Length: 410
Image 1 (tube, rainbow, N blue to C red):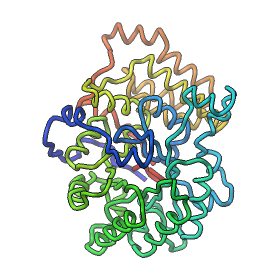
Image 2 (cartoon, rainbow, N blue to C red; image 1 turned 180 degrees about the vertical axis):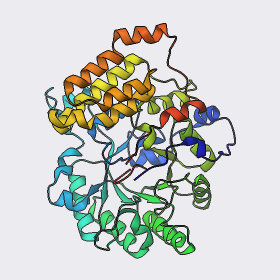
Image 3 (cartoon, one colour; image 1 turned 120 degrees about the vertical axis):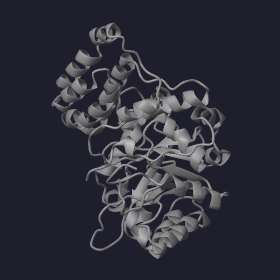
């Protein structure tokens, strides 16, 4: 499925003040940290199918992401002991890197917490059982995916299709909250509606209200409809109006977050309490560091070549723990082409990553484009990391189809 990736088509955003001022004034809502200790900044890494495994999450955390969400896991996969159970274990890398016991590895910066295990399914009893499994695996939050525009299975709703079946969606939410221990918060990911008809708008309202009535801590709302999938701009105005109508509820916004500036634009224009960063953080963990820099009153600066090299090597090493040596070189190509956007010779670097078939080839590309000689060549050419501006938005979007939370990134 093609995903629109051209930021020039986005409508102008009406802001009340300069984005730098919004960033300096931004603080995390105390209800967020009360529900999830350690969630100390108003943004997080979303769940992205095929991307947000433990390797990507740990790299994001090392660059300032306070909270992460797993890929959406099917309840039946969890119940049947499928590969998703191991791949999304929040302590997998920390327990398998050979550096001693789990606590020592956490102290070494391999702590994948706090984390939400995101679940998706079709039947209340099965999604309840799957949620119990995620809780036992050590996830700090259980997030119910009622957002992604996956296909129906045997005419039964799943993901965002539940937004067209409000009664069933509420039963899903009720079953999960009843199954998960009261000490573990539950949250929900939604889209603004199944489509733009009045009937579907009313269904969204019912599901949204029910989540809070059932004790869910917050909803993350993606500002496109299910039928819209990822085509066309998201409707930030919907988020603004929802927050105004529901002032007592914690709401995270999602959609069209391409650069760090968009995090604070959405908070200003929409009034959301936090922002879910999805496509904008693939190959760009620095977006979280930049957000914290802006909150501290400093300009958001891109990564040096040395910083890019360190992250590429680190991400690859983490990925090998999860996927094994044989799969990792191919798995990491899609990350390499996204990381390439930060390099002064982006097109050439991207082409070389696409050709990688082995760990040796991966290391050779990194040495050629990110080693000392490449750093010296970039310096001679006058290249230096730039402050993130509107003009850099185009660099934040690669010309590839992306997948959120289950089938496609949010």
